[in-house]
Length: 69
Image 1 (cartoon, helix red, strand yellow):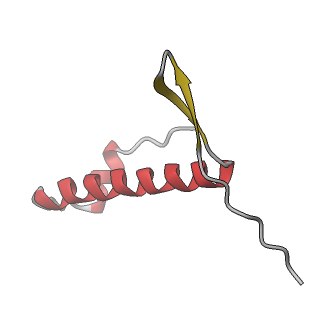
Image 2 (tube, one colour):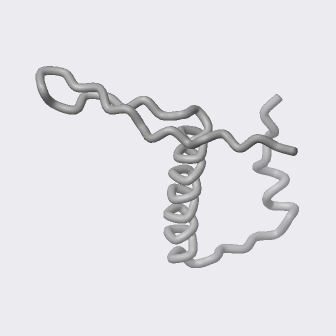
Image 3 (spheres, helix red, strand yellow):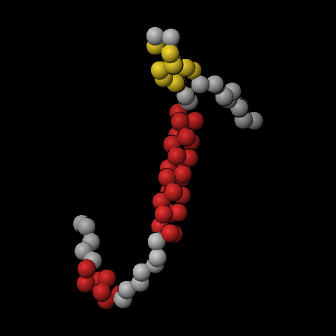
């Protein structure tokens, strides 16, 4: 039998009567960061798809390629 933990709602911290910070569960925060990263990746992919593809020979690439060690 597994116990379900009750999801807590975010706590808002006020400073001078105005919202200044939010306290979230760490899992919720990590999920939010992951979603933001996904959105950024999608935006970058959309930009990349707008540019025309450029192909070159493998030999030419290897001449310019220098791996970072």
